Image (cartoon, rainbow, N blue to C red):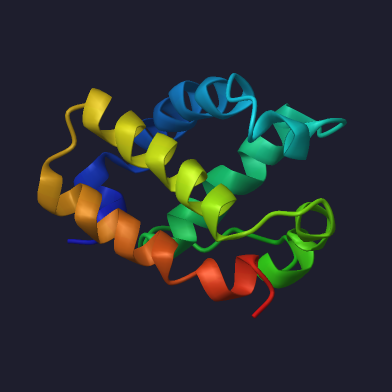
Length: 120
């Protein structure tokens, strides 16, 4: 069974993002990176991307992580910003009662994207 299925599929990912983005937008360090961003569109892309990353349906049709994060990198996004983003990601999964081993799997997948997100 894929991590996507173990987490609860599309409904679970959508629900997690519904909790996650308010945390990010309420964080004074992270919120400036989302100024002017269509959050409804972003959530849709994030749902499709996470489904793909976690072994679910492959419907993501966006650009790669390196390209999509060009603007935030130009705004100063660095390892500390990435870590803060991941902190909220992990906290959201904990709030939803996701088992620690599944949180660790999801975090490892996200951590694997660090180099592309940060343009390395």
